[in-house]
Image 1: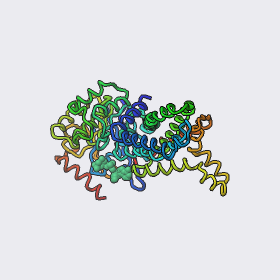
Image 2 (image 1 turned 45 degrees about the vertical axis):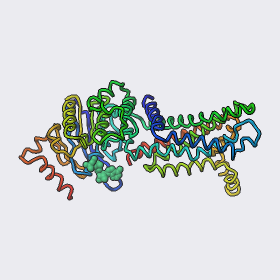
Image 3 (image 1 turned 60 degrees about the vertical axis):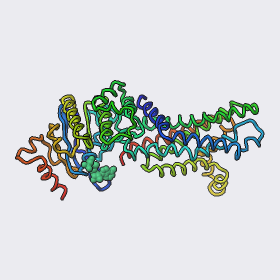
Image 4 (image 1 turned 45 degrees about the horizontal axis):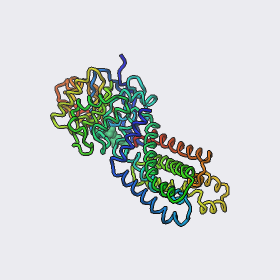
Length: 238
Length: 243
Ligand SMILES: Nc1ncnc2c1ncn2[C@@H]1O[C@H](COP(=O)(O)OP(=O)(O)OP(=O)(O)O)[C@@H](O)[C@H]1O
Ligand SMILES: [Mg+2]
């Protein structure tokens, strides 16, 4: 079966600066890909192009076979995307915000209730988003990405700002959804990779440095952190 | 269609979730009321019509409509919610039209709330209510024209102050293009341009409506003006979503 996410030669230039260069990988159903790399490596930029927010300077990306540039609306229907920083409309109440996203996507009230249950938001459903703590805001963003039970999930730092219990919950949620979906998460927490990912892609300065299973990366007995440093420090220095 | 209506509904509710709606409506109504009776010389004219009010509205909208449009896209950019909105399965024109319709409906609410003026003239005399209706249609079209223009400018920046200033300047340009000062200046030097300027002038086109005449060519003008700027808005949005 064809992979749900197919990326080929994806490149993004901002003026003379190349943020992402020739990135290519594909993700099949059942895979959870951890996207790792130092700050400014190009993780968010790659995810934004995949989500159809930024236009690639070169290369293609397809979600469930739909090209994100040629057929953006069709591609976005299959995608749940959590943007970096989980932006949402501050003056809206949690439930109204999710209801808005559900209405655009054409799913009903029960989808909102289900997403709130998955991310444990029921207690704050009538609270304006601007009055929520950072972790709850992140959960609202996550709930929005899960609303329509999409086959493809792209989550930019989904566990950033969550307390240890919530991190555990979200990792459990991702593991539980994994068999049905193709999931890409970016993270700076290396244990997370071992805990939820079936595959890790390390990127620095816009290029892929490694694409392997977490076990494969630590094959030679080093810790994941050592491997990460060994891979990315020379690239950063270059 | 579904997406368009969802966006319009959210935007419309957002006006009332923030103090924007209250401030806008109060200022608009106070200024419209006060200026109609003072500067407009509502009583002094001794005529039962709303022409003093209609003559004011394009100038009030000149400042108030940019205050509505400045946040439309600039705020989405600053909050980062544009990333959320544009990764929902919406085409750019659905998002653009949804926001525009919400803002337009809001202006319609503001205009509807001036109904005491209509009651007053009907109480004092027997005005031509058909002409008054034409005047209101004209006001709504002027609001639409300014909204479309302001929204397109808001899409091009993340700074609301810049969006506001640009929109006021641009609206002023299209309002004043047909004024006697500009016309005389241009016809003395560039006669060809004088005609174009008058033809593109929102205030000039509105004058007919204020007198109670709905001319097809004026309606077509407003429709194409709005359509053109909405198209620019969608194009700007699609081209520089992220930067
Ligand atoms: N709109 C933009 N204009 C110019 N440069 C940009 C823009 N967006 C991103 N960049 C640059 O592209 C590079 C990659 O940024 P990106 O946000 O993808 O990094 P990241 O891997 O997500 O980092 P982090 O771990 O800090 O989130 C950075 O050097 C950033 O400054
Ligand atoms: Mg990032």
